[in-house]
Length: 368
Image (cartoon, rainbow, N blue to C red):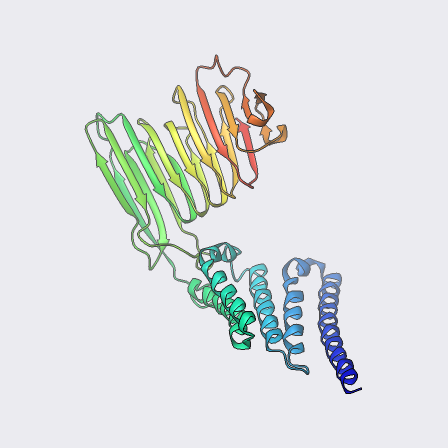
């Protein structure tokens, strides 16, 4: 009888917890929808939906204190609530959504938390098991503080590099290692003109230039390991290179918006490795033949090519005609080769060979 009574009480405890969680979630949903009903112009649902997650976390947190006390439930509720609060900061504009992308560099924390959870389960040690959610909660909060998105705006500092065009230089190679922010590439009458906007406490980008009688080699990269985007500020590089040199580019981006306008440059080779964000590449027709290898990562990729240029496209996965706009690209060879060409490719005076790895990103090739 005693055991049966205990089972009944335990069942009631679990029922009370479940009812508390469900009840608070329904109340939160009702409040959000009610406010949006009477004040639709506020965009309340689009901005305040994380309140439901916060309520869920609060309910789990409070339920953990109901008999019998469950520390794991308390910490689980704290973790859910913390995620909800940060999402709320995202939707109301206090914290950029890039915050979650930047957390990817802290992936070892997930291993640490998993290790605590496994050790706690094997040894039946509540303290070790509790360290798993505590580690994740602390990481989320410290990431906010590190980014200074709430407490401080670090401001920006401008840097510039420039050199006049030297006679005799016919070829050039340029390597750009960019991390987060916005990267723009274009043409100039100078050898190079580079404007960099960095966070106020960051060092000047490192530019190495090696110049010979007929060739030049440029390499630019940040001196700081830029990990996070503080506030709504944005790092930005504008790189303008000589329109009179036959260039080979090696570009690496991270969490960024990249706009590469190559239409006024002589580009014979492009090797582009993307990360997360968006990439727009506009090719020109100033060289007889250009080769481009693009690994888009998980970035949205948009490629623009002159309509008069013969294009040969090879992609790593299946695509459809809806990915082509204002350009006639037809499949050639076997279907699983994913190779496409414009009808006049072989006879075209200007050719562009594209080898693209588009991962899980959105993709489009457009003629202009």
